[in-house]
Structure formats: structure tokens, C-alpha cells
Amino acid sequence: MLEAKYEAYDSVEGRLLSIDLYNKTAFRLYTGQGSESLLCTFPPELKQDAKAAIEKRVYVYGFAKEREDGKKVSMKVRELEELPSSLEAPLLQEILLIGDS
Image 1: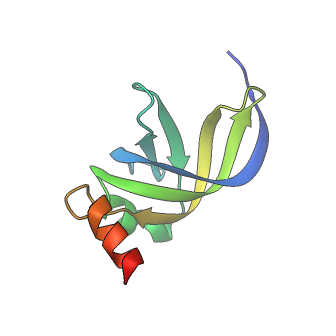
Image 2: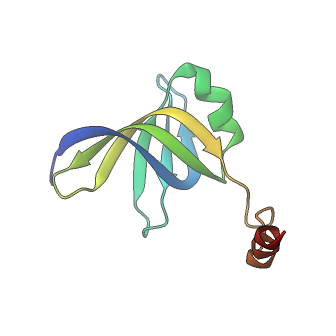
């Protein structure tokens, strides 16, 4: 298994499906690439946001650790943005109509 070699500020989109609040603040972000997940730790001030985002699509921003092959293995989250569900997201036709105005 390759070790994380690099750390850089980055962002990742995925579904927040599990959260661990026992002696730490961390969650798993599932990015849609099979069953792989990204371990994300976060500061206590994001605890309520993380709890509210369970089972939702989110964008997270922070310092990601990457392996030499570019695969992200963990992230220290600094910001968490809940994304609209597919039911709330505008349709392509609506976006195109907005552009014609």
C-alpha cells in the first residue's frame, strides 16, 4: 500500500454517509468511485454542519493528503458545503433558459 506523500489544499465532492464522533470528529466521504471513501477529519465547529449533511451530497474543502499516484487518502476539512439534491437542482433546460434572458 502506498503512503501519503503530499498535502495540498483541495476540494472533493461526495456523499457523507457515516460520521464518527467518539473521541474524534471524522466522517467518510463516498465519492462515487466504487465503494471507496475518503477519511475526513474536521474541527469541532463543523460538527453540526456535518451531522446535518448525513446522507447528502457535499463539497468539502481542506488539506488533502495524496499518494504519489495522486489518489487522495485523507482530508483535514476546513469548510463543508451541502449541495442540492438532484430533486432540487435545476434542470438543464432551466439553466439554458436563464442564459437566454
